[in-house]
Length: 334
Image (tube, rainbow, N blue to C red; front, side, top):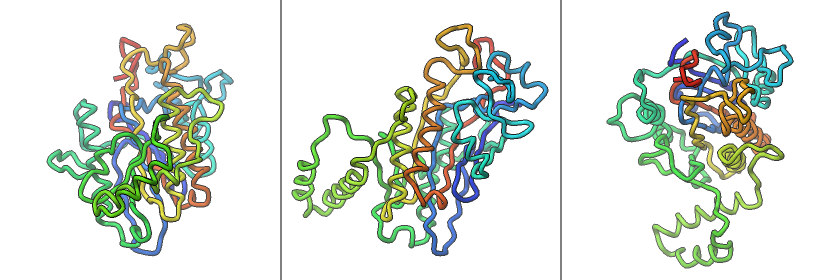
């Protein structure tokens, strides 16, 4: 098992996918209302922590204290068994339930053609869908140009990036939307409506302002987050964005493609250490257990907000490259 390890959870029609490569998505030119939610786990997820190959006879020796409790052991951090070889991280119960209901599939050992070790270059490969960095248009933006016209009828934007920064995958000539949570001191609704009236006659600002207000109206009154679970700041932020992705994708005139970036999955050192050094049960230090919790709870919220549209939704989750199975000298993975 090498640095090229990848993890993919892929749905065959309403479900979830976790991968290490940029997919090629095909939309038929038939009448359809399919949705796609793309989540990029930036930082190089340790696939053997997320979906450990516990059934490999060399696994336990190579992972040492990075390994969670084996399936069926009854330990406090017991892996969730998938089959005789693979399991899921203990903090992903919702994803595990999708697998058990045949709405998710785990595939390991997938890779792009990229063979270097730069997170930045590898992420560009994922966003561009190619190792050719001369190409500046993201793979999702290119996809928009190939979609049937039916996808754009009656909606402002077919694709939307959720978060503070629009990912490279959505950048290019095709028009896309964006949304991020409003800060506490944002302008009130009445002031924004007045500004919209003021700019209505402007051919450039008017439509853009009205589009932003439309997204704000749709998002108002909807609560994201992780109920009753301390998922940390990053986990809670992702959960809010994933929850809102479900709202936007479910709307009749909303987007049909949404993206979320979920970063800081790097784990070079002290990957398993918790507050008490003796509790070495395969968890990343401090924030990382909450990362998995936020991922799992956020996807659950997205499914709930999608409602009936879940059956027409594919969720793809991927990372730019995997990590070594064997623990390094600083109790991390490279």
